[in-house]
Length: 274
DNA sequence: CGTATGCCCTGCGCGC
DNA sequence: TGCGCGCAGGGCATAC
Image 1 (cartoon, chains in turn yellow, cyan, red):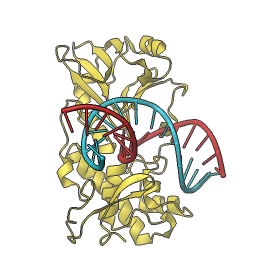
Image 2 (cartoon, helix red, strand yellow):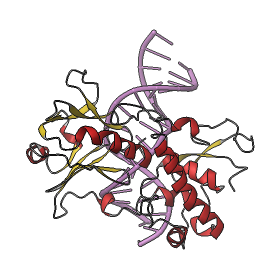
Image 3 (cartoon, protein in one colour):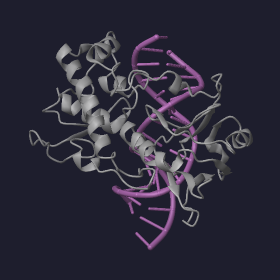
């Protein structure tokens, strides 16, 4: 599932192919993926527009087109946005194809169909609620132990639920929350307000560290993810708990357990994480 | 407001 | 071998 490191990798790999490219035609093979405005208006507004020299990203949102309204894309669980030559066979679940002036195509493919596009107008129409309310980027200065401590105060929800909440911090998903909490030595089910100052500091630091590392490895290919050039990420083999249930903890050797926290499959070493 | 739950959807893995 | 079922999950709506 694309989280911040994967979306950032897609941004970086798409940029050289998209910068300055005109959208000659938008082929809406499955119009449901256009969330705003209606598909016909979307098509009319995007055709003829040009990709900016710099693609944007906020949290897990990709902002590939700017000027006179911004094209916003969210990949959710299984979305893929990549460049392909027109000769490449159109794979199953390819829902949108942008024909570029270079002759290349920007393709959107999404098996589970949760991903989609918004065109956000300069007056704010079309802005996804989640994007408007996004918390700080963990790799920017606003993210700190002080900020996190203030967010956790008075909250009884498990720390994992709070970290998955995009309005608290942008970009963490199920994989990297489990990894960050393992590295911080904190059990995901602990009520947020009960964490010590030292634990909060470790979580703030490890959340940033794991995302930064994962970006360097070009993300995690767990099931369906690949980048803007259809290439997988290498962070999978660096994962310490996620998808390792029953396997020995790298630190203490006891088996990683899989439980359910905040409605999500959760991987934890109950010896290292208290 | 904070928290919990269910829904969207497809493919896969499991049990029989 | 084949079928049906449950599970997977990010964001959002809805209920409490």
